[in-house]
Length: 395
Image 1 (cartoon, rainbow, N blue to C red):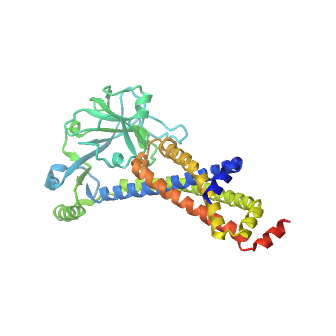
Image 2: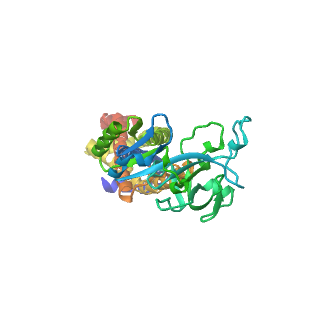
Image 3: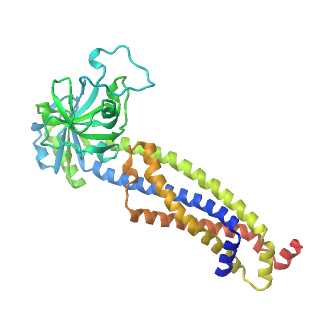
């Protein structure tokens, strides 16, 4: 059976090549779809755990408050301070949308503005942990920094800025660029240039020379500790709004789910088309082999042996298709998608070779199942007939 399968595959080179191309498309699509599903599920789990082991503390009226009034932060594993605002860079130009409605009612102080977040550290910020922003050059802001800033790569490119250059802001201070990041966050448009991700700055908190903040985020190791601290804060500070810091994560997951849906629709469409083409080719292929089927049945071969031969033929062809599919799927996931998303959700596809191999093996198992079902379905209409009936129709 195996020898006959190998002989047929090597003898019918053109037909085997066509089937191999179709199997390559199907397997590549299965691999890509499975990888997207698994990596998105892993990212969602990681982000969910991170979101549920951190608390955000703000005032119910959204006003500033003194973070030193909250002695509970000493019980946390760590905490970050957030002070948000708008600023105007001196002698620098912000990124502007090329096709958008511009407001004519803006005063000079609301033109050429950037948003900034003053914080004591950026590494654990949700925008970086979720992959919306990715550090491209330099380092993150640390608690010991003073007059340091991180800028978006598009803003840096437009103004010919590099690491360790200095920028002047409207508070008459010079800030050294220690980090350059890329990516996009979820944007809300108010007509100001500060709405855009490219016009966002991260700066060290100590340069604000104040104890006032808009938000405190406290980090814990376990969900139990988070809930206990939440009750304690609500009891000790009735004017504070204490909640699990899930907003940014939910927004990120919403965007990822949308992207995942679009890619899945494209991949599933390709799979359906390829399966239809494969089924049609198998039907034509078996019609041409009716005489062979009749002879094999008449000389005593069992129907299961004939089915096994046809399945082996396709499985042999699927081996080189598997090699091509793994390479094409890897390239698509690692490069094409990241280019399309501009590194905005790079964490969506960051996992090791072992995970890739397991995902691919699972996808190949699905393909093998599809091959078996397709062969049984298409052969069934012929194998239910007797050898004499098949040979008489041929004559």
